[in-house]
Image (cartoon, rainbow, N blue to C red):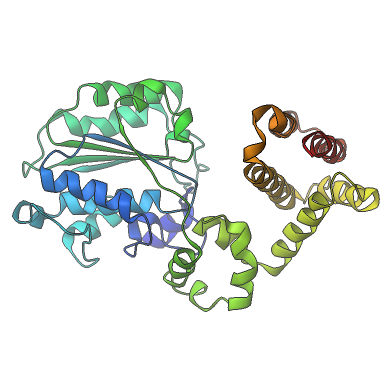
Length: 354
């Protein structure tokens, strides 16, 4: 398979943007990077790190950044690094980019091939095969690194297989576990990892990251970027997904309906439910649910001082929406009544928390 085909088939890659292992620019998260650098400086780098935070903020980019740093031959002569930078034209960078470095294993969903679709999980057999690397000493006496991208894709069996090695790690082994929801990671894995929580990026950092991606992102009109930024929530990936005037307009439409609650524009809500019930509306449906989740989170943040009891109706309706959305997805149910009920439930919750 050619490299171009391989990149196009990556299940975790945003179309048209470099994969995190090919991304050498890094924005924000200075405290997180400094924690890793301090471990290298002290010679006591913890063997397992759970790198958590929202999707699209640089977690995997940081993991590959550390992998290049510890696997670079110069590391033996640089015990006190100031940064984790490794030049793209070095041998270690090229090997990691091609996933051919002998001391690196990456656990991820398998990309699509001509005969098979991309996998939806990381199976236990793949974990066992990847972890065979830890059964012998690294050829150069250096680190052996395993990147898990991401923990949400592990099955119970594959998570337990990973746990066995993390519990009794071989010398100079390093596990970098990327997670979009670290609180859901197997507790026994969490307890053996040092946690590194990365927060959403600042607006300027998101802008710089997007401009660094090359074409077509480097020349996205500032006006469109300005419109998408408030809904990107500090995530480069989410902001990229919204760099479309129609998508931004749709998010603004749904947000206006939500902002009007508890008063409801029945005509517009019914029209929205009709539109989202169509078979070709999957992307808009997902975007509407993301907008609702963002809106509820914003309301909870605004009213944080009101106390848990006062905010309970909003929390409960949010949980109900998530539960019903899963049922609709599993059983392929009509979305129309769900959207109508969603607005009714949110309107009642807003009344009760006013």
